[in-house]
Amino acid sequence: MKRNQAKQVAAKPKRTRRIWGSLSRRFLSVGFLRRWYIRRTLRYIDKYRDKGRPLPEGMEDLARYLARVPKYERAKKFEEAITTNQELENPQDLGRQMRRATARQRKSGKGGGYRPGLPPGTIKQAGRGRPR
Image 1 (cartoon, rainbow, N blue to C red):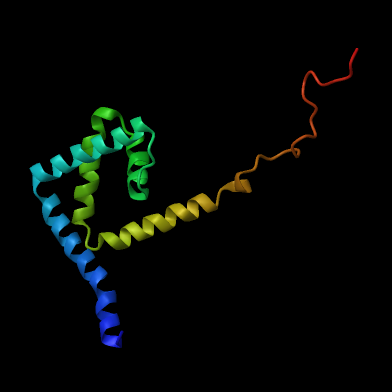
Image 2 (image 1 turned 90 degrees about the horizontal axis):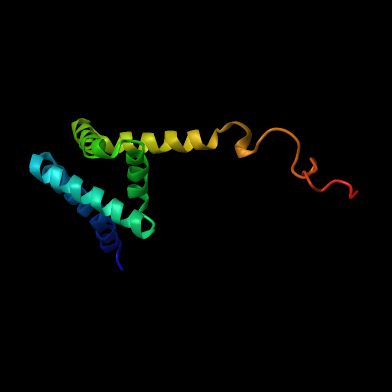
């Protein structure tokens, strides 16, 4: 394969991603289509949870966020998040910043996930004392 053909093949995914992004922004800017998409996504998440299937990575984050919200407010909060994301100048940069911030926050937990105190097994468990 020649160099120019390799560049064209590499450029196609970026171009299609940009096209799909612009189409989805237009789609979500229309009120009734946005609300239909929100209802559909919430049903998708509920069905996957009921069946015990793992959600895709982006959906898992969304489901975790919406799990903190009461069920009757989920659609409203989801719509607020979508409209806020549309109002930003460059939402991809903010998403990247938020992902990096959450990754840093997970890594910087005090103690690294271990409880302070004695190492395991040093305290004798009840009922394992001397036989009488």
